[in-house]
Image (cartoon, rainbow, N blue to C red; front, side, top):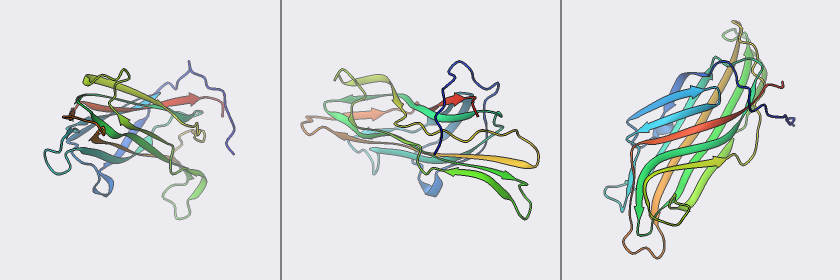
Amino acid sequence: MMASFAVAHAAVPDRSFKVPTVQVGYAKSCRGVDTLTVSSTPKALTWSFSDFGSSYPETSPGSTVAYCVMEYEIGDTPAGWRFAVDSVETSGSGKLTSGAQLDQFGTSIGLNVAYVTNPGARVDEIIWALRSGGWGDYTMRNTTLSADGKDLDGKFNVNSPSPSVIWSPCWPENVSRDSFQIQFSHQTYFYMGKTPDAADPKGTIDNDFEVAINLKLVTIC
């Protein structure tokens, strides 16, 4: 069982992560993304999607659905820290009128972590590994992205807190003969639809779509 730790909110590592490899569209499931921009800070991994939109009613086959599955590796990890997912923040712009809504909207996150000594040798030794499968499902259903019940017309920002806190193992010192492997995977998606009493529903989610995975960090290892 993973122990509980007090979170040091003020302190952060002195450098951010590096993302040496990215695989987008795993199993051919990344629809409509033209360009994906990755940025990182010690407390967040942010993904900016280009040409990742949808519309309602359906203007072409599948136009009401957008989704993207991605896997990526994190490198250059700061020693002596562990982390958990704190929240997922989604932002963008769009228009939803006359009962148009997002039937499902969100991001699901998975994580694999392994510390391997003597990588590349014939007999690697896995010191420990965490293969959680799922690190949180940040999904909303039947939403107009508007808390006051009005039609959406412009920018939106949704912050979904983590349903549970699962701490990673500690990051060890990066030494030449060892390998600390972190692999994130997450799926971002939205499915457009309408309310049962919709009169003339129309909706668009525009292309300026961004997902930030905010991290909770602690130095007690």
